[in-house]
Length: 125
Image (tube, rainbow, N blue to C red; front, side, top):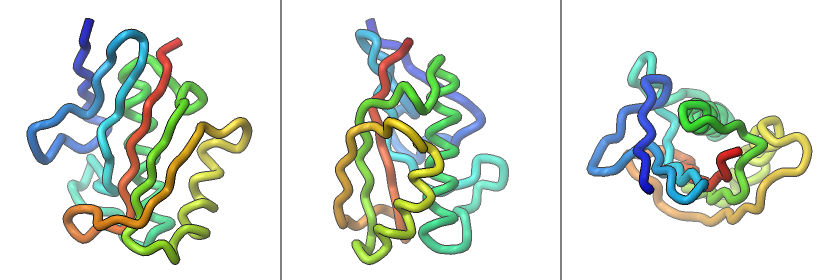
């Protein structure tokens, strides 16, 4: 079974993809950028502000799928500049203060002049 997840509390997809898909008890959240769904604008204030908005968007999508951040098992982080790792990580840790998920962080070129993009996989409780 495949279930499409949609919520107004996260940015509307900018292309041909879903915010998340649930399949066999796993929630696959598409790469999220720092767009604030209320304003339609990207978070301003550097990689820390962008990371906070990205993870807030992911949190909203997970909630729409019946999950919480503690249900995330794998995260991929894409940074425009690897030098932003420490600042991104400081915010990231506030979303998973204990028992964080497995994670891969790579330097990449996220779309639309953003500094960070994050996707994840969660297990639906």
